Amino acid sequence: MHTPPLAGGPHGPTALYPLLGVVLDALREGAVARGGPLPGGGPEAVAVRVGAAVGDPLPLRGTSAEEALTTLVRALAEGAADPADPRCAAHLHTPPLALAAAADLAASALNPSLDSWDQAPAAAELEALVTRALAAEFWPGGDALVTSGGTESNQLALLLARERHGAVQVVQGANAHHSVARAAWLLGLSEPVTVPAPSGTLDLAALDEALTDLHHPLLVTATAGTTDTGAIDPLPEIAALCARHGAELHVDAAYGGPLIFSETHRAKLRGLEHAHSVTLDLHKLGWQPVAAGLLAVPDPARLAPLAHTADYLNADDDTEAGLPDLLGRSLRTTRRPDVLKIAVTLRALGRTGLAELVDRTLALAGTLADLVEEHPRLDLYERPALSTVLFRPTGASDDEVAGIRRALLTEGRAVLGRARADGRLWLKATLLNPHTTTGDLAQLLKTVEGSIPR
Image (cartoon, rainbow, N blue to C red; front, side, top):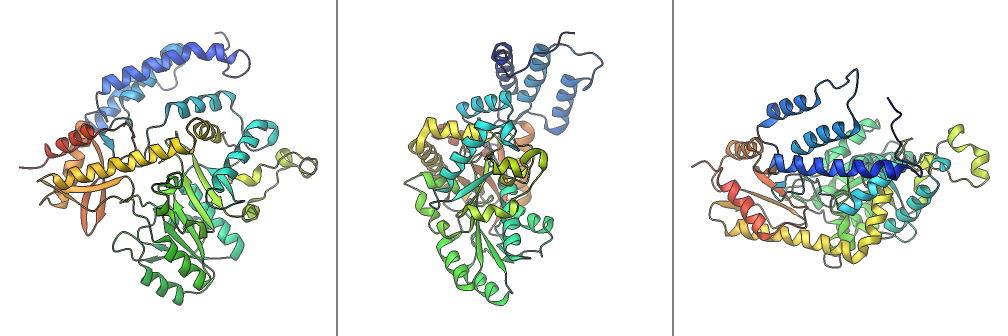
């Protein structure tokens, strides 16, 4: 057997080029075979098809690069939940931009690791430039760390607060992302105090009362874009309460943060500039391949607790000689250059291009809400704050709503989420595909209507 070619170096592109055609053909064939937003038949049918394609996962002798790519990429595509299909609208799972996916290929081929400068000279500088620019959208002179997503960003926010103040008491809304409580558990902090959010956003009077009664140090976590409804907490009022009570404020804007690029919608984030840290995910309303998370802070000095030394990566004499120290930029050691796809997207689209995508996507949610309100057999929960729309068949029980969703999934006809609000279960459509049309949305509702029990 000859030694397989590498992706990097001057000969790497020559080796990659024919394989890209194989992969693209397999992606196309898999999507055609799937024929919808999700493979039909449910978990057992998918398991059978994948098992048949894989065969022996670790054979004694291999086949060829072309055969392996064709077989497994096709199987993965055929069995995928495809967020590029307008009927796939359950989660904050975005269809990535083609240019971002292409940039991610370059990152994989070059394979820099952002744990020491000598492994990633250009990537390290690119990350520094892009993260500072993104943080500056919230505060002049701020900085940001690249993370794997909102969960890691929220954990880092709690860690930094703990390292500054000791065992902070976290205060969260009932609408907070589950990762906040999990981060408190991982960090050995007390269980968060949970403040009611009866209308989907954090209740200000209850927060004021909680902050009055609790002992310091305190960290309040607010949300700009909840996973259930897309609701945005009243950030200016929360920031004022935090200032009055001497509490720090972290805002989980993993979903809603990219509204900062939009002149039309950025006012919804007013008050965020008073936060001490902000979570942002560009693999949501930024259309990046996973992962593209950030944790932004107003002052780079806030990141000092992450400083760490490993002599083989950032020896003191190397740092003193001017080699950048990267270990304090993450809790992870090996780290791929996820910043490249972000940088390519920012350069190609600019602020106005990103704003157009954000505006178009939020407008689609408004259109879907209109269609639901006009539908004689569907009820709308409320007008969308971002791109999430909750609706349910009129008069249906919660069990029936859950059954409709599962039937659509099993048949591979539509991928809708579920959310509990106002004491009832709702179907959830999270729109993240800016190419979706009004006709697509009408067809989605028609598909749901066809599954309503008569």
